Image (cartoon, rainbow, N blue to C red; front, side):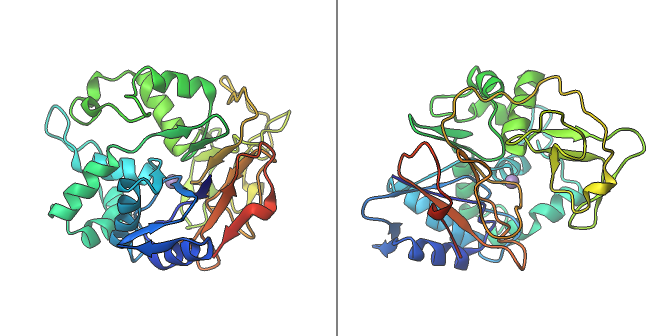
Length: 303
Ligand SMILES: [Mn+2]
């Protein structure tokens, strides 16, 4: 069965500690478990000190059938930083903000080096989601309708079509919305005049929707997440034209959301595995999944 691990962001020591804690070992250069497969929900890179090592460990495990890796927004951005559109412009604009977010990877990877190009080529082959008869894994959010839109475009194995990286303008807006929703999560724009300050001190107008647990009467304050002081948000109802729809109760595993505190399940069939290893107080977490349809907090492990 699967050990599903949250966002690693280049923290190689935490990755090795967590693998070791779960009974994985390095044999002939390949980290592996005698009976289990690792699944990463993405965001291997950006921020941390050991991004090359993290990519090397996961890429090697993947090559030997010991791990699967879902594409995170940071892998998407990494490919989009390098890829050029029809007009020769990078898909991800090389703005100062985007550069700062990606700088550590570009430096550690030695931009343009053979290692860098191999990593980018591998990132481009990562699936947007993994679905088995027992569960679903995605980087940021699962919505049946959005997955259905993506499936019209994706290659077998839920991989982005290679034409996307050469001819991005030929793809439909509906495709990009579904892609954004799945890899980056749904966001709401606050009403005119409202902003909030995020945990990094940045003032923002768009707020993340808590898609996995929406209240019956959603408001900007109670249906959103990642806001240090929710009192900054207006407590007025939101009209959600396309509420996330999740038809089955099959467990969903995701990352992306920088959860704080001791890892717990979001619901008995939904687990966020990003517990903020990037932050001083954060941990790297995983869920040890054995096919159960009702998840159990005691199967969360972390370092
Ligand atoms: Mn992410």
